[in-house]
Image (cartoon, rainbow, N blue to C red; front, side, top):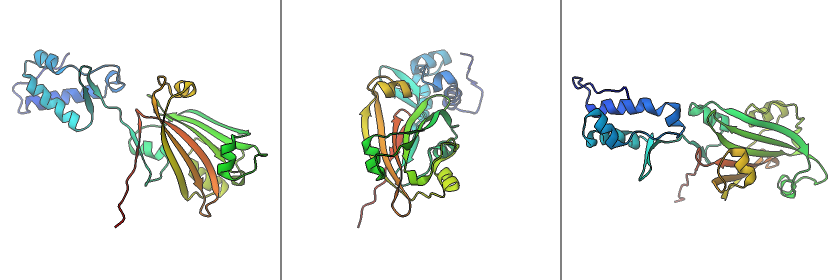
Amino acid sequence: MDFKLNQNSPVPLHSQIEEYLRTLLVQDEYRSGKRFLPKEVTLAKKLGVSRNTVRQAVNTLVNEHLIQRKKGVGTKVVNKKIATRLDNWISFTKEMRKQGIEVVDYLVTISLEIAPDEVYGALSTSKSKKIWKLEKIRGSKNAKYLYSVSYFHPRVGITGKEDFRTPLYELLETAHDTIVATSKESISAIKADKKLVSILDVAPKTPILRRERLVCDPGDRPVEYNIVFYHTDYITYDIEIKREL
């Protein structure tokens, strides 16, 4: 450790330690969770200060939700999660950009195929028709955040030649004059099966957030049936409910 406290500085010792710890937070080995931050007692001994001085610096970062303590384990950098809100329907790409995270598309494929029965039922279309299926694996450069499967009503006019790396609903509006207005959703918690373990790079039985969505146009006609599986280390789903008076 090259860091040394400046005993002659007007900056309090705990503030100097806090700034040092902040420099560690942005380093890949700490940010990825591969390494724990130095223990309070170890840091106190190396810097020649009391443990309370170190703890004051650590508490500041804990209160800012930048790090978390786990008793008997250590102190780690908190993974920055993407918060998706039910009352604020914006694209995943825009949600990521709002938090300064660059979107990485690990997979984007479009295919025309016979869909499961539940898809035809949700879209209210004939089972005799093949339906366009869009699959995406998305995240940041550090991790895969979600696996998404979308099926589109034949009325939309998908050709398979569209650029599905662009925000989906903007694409539907500009390329196919299809405007989406409502989203009917259900959310459940599941355990990662073999397929999701492979797709999202998670351990078996890892908790996964499953969101099922039926997207409709202003006439309440189905446009898209979508299922997304979220890696819960990186994604939260916030709900705000107002009481009727």
